Length: 154
Image (cartoon, rainbow, N blue to C red; front, side, top):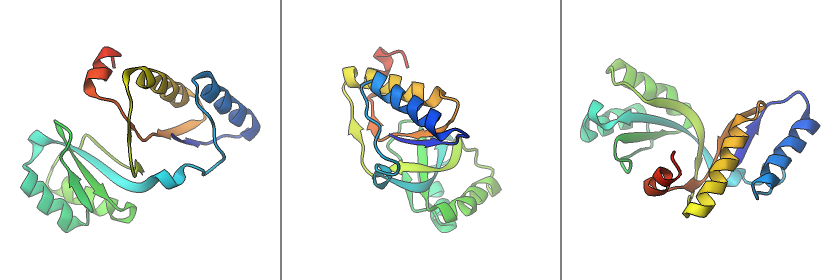
């Protein structure tokens, strides 16, 4: 996990974040030590019923997108370089194509699939970090199957 924090009290926040990690069987590494596992990318999600794949592919690639992913059942994911994000988003807006989400974020280079037991623990850790007042973003490289998410009532 990559945790982005904004705080006015570094010592208190570091101690609190370290406590959250240890409470949920995690370890807090030094600042920047997992950043190499992520790339900063623009990520735009679009419902599949909003536009056809071929039409979307042509539109976003012409606007500067790097890739169009179709793995999710109901969403397309448009991947851009951070500097191309605004141009791609504008091209979608100009065509009145609604987006579910659009942000520049940290995208994992590789992912780890979690079993049910680990998923439960990691999701609790993720939620606790996300709920902490000084945490701005939590980026993670884990995947949990839809079946396990359903068992965990998520």
